[in-house]
Amino acid sequence: MKIKFCGIRRLEDVAAINVLQPDYMGMILSAGFRRSVPLSTAKQLIQQKSAAVQAVGVFVNETTETILQITEQLHLDEIQLHGAETPEQVRQLQQMTNLPVWKALRIGTAEELEAAATFPADCLVLEGNTGTAVGGTGICADWNLFAQRQWQRPFFLAGGLKPENIRQAIAMVQPSGVDFSSGIEENGVKSPDKMKQIITIIRGA
Image (cartoon, rainbow, N blue to C red; front, side):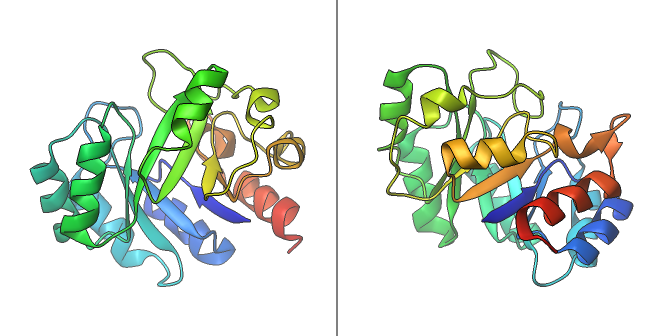
């Protein structure tokens, strides 16, 4: 089970990540969101992280040129698109970067779930339909809906995951990975204790 801690903003967060060793560290690189980080900060965070933890840059409705420039500048390991990006833009980024390109999709109906199955990303990040809100809302997806489909491709479950519900979510949905943001926060900042709880629950470490 792959683990991604997203919305990382502080060197203190990276220090906890280096101890706990999730698989991925996500940073919001588009401006205008509560967890957005400037590129100068993102560069520091990546420089301080353990080499075993992969750096995921999260972009929301950016141009391909902007994503390419930032990806090269920060030496990202993965690109995650979290807006209204098209399959064509995903294919373009795959070809131009040779990196895995993830796509976050909001799923509220069986039709949206079926459509997600054919979206041409290397990995999907599936969350509930949160309207215009973008990630980190703490709103859980409809796990019963997600459980209706047998997936033949990698996907992360996101949205409202926390220590209190992660066992149930994994059992019902059986994702290949899980993505945490608000669920590992306390008073608006990342909590090392909650991060540790997640790692202990999932890995038994």
